[in-house]
Amino acid sequence: MINTGLLAYGMSGKVFHAPFVSAHQGFNLVAVAERHTKQASTDYPGVISYDSPEALLDDENISLVVINTPNYTHYDYAKKALLKGKDILVEKPFTATVEEAEELFALAEKQNKTILFYQNRRWDSDFISVKEVLASNKLGKLNEVTIRYDRYRAVIGPKSFKEEPVPASGLLFDLAPHLLDQVISVFGEPSSYTKVLAKNRKKTQVDDYFQIHLQYENGLQIYVISNMLVAGTQPAFVIHGETGTFSKARADVQEEQLLKGIRPGMDSYGVEAPENAGLLTVVQEDGTMKSEKIIANPGNYLQLFDAVYNTLIHNAEYPVSTDQVLTQLRIITGL
Image 1 (cartoon, one colour):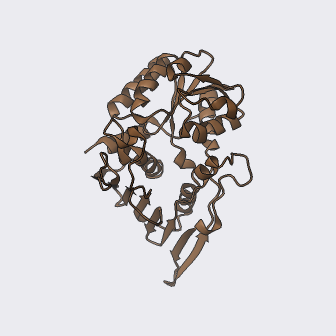
Image 2 (image 1 turned 180 degrees about the vertical axis):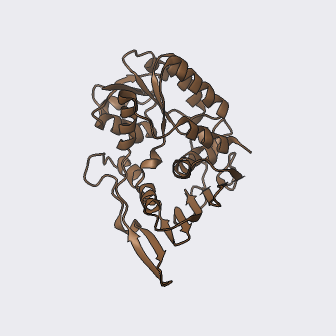
Image 3 (image 1 turned 135 degrees about the horizontal axis):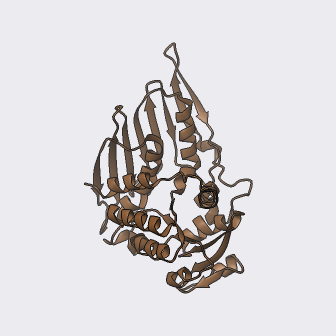
């Protein structure tokens, strides 16, 4: 079993990490860092609660450290953990700069340690559905893909590391790592890109809108968009090909379920509501159009932890590569 520690036990630790580390037979949740409220030992009896991340890193019994602290601290804690001889699983964004990422990769190689990336949205039910439709080739040669992640949050949020002008703050660093990772995992590195940022909320100090236009050698145009002032819902995935179109809502329920205490392994976990099925419209040979609803298979972030386990124990290739993360960071931080 992999003895694991979480560097924070806020929403990320409680919702996205502890339930899966606890549920997976290959992991042992040893400790968390909690500076103030001590909740972890109530949720997971026997778990050690350290007063600081540094104290947790000193625990020689821990071999894997989950770095789920504020964005601007990722580089510092990743470096400290590697120097302490730990393997690390790092939340998005991996770092604030390409240079920081490259330095950590070199350090991990020197220390003979493994860096893993927490890109959980690859295991969302809606994205899984998108990949299955693409694999069917029912859309023919693709010409345009749009992926959106919208919210309506007009009020400035309380998390200073997201809302104040510190390294890796703003909507671009918050959500572009998810969307770009999905794009890069399917379509690879673009040949070129352009990017637009905006500040639309009153008194915002950071970007709350972005659009990234990715261009590919085969003519494919991909648009990655996020906006914090979108009321109502619209399709999160729209894919156009020479023989059809597929549209899909952002419908993964895992985060909502985890907040309600529904855990991986329960029958309803990761199952989308039927009304959120995608719509596939295909042009028939006679020119008529046929539409059908595509029910998504359940999402399951536990598969990410399967991948972590297989990489660390069986030396399997981790699905999120360093090259993919560097491509993502170059687009986010580039002009």
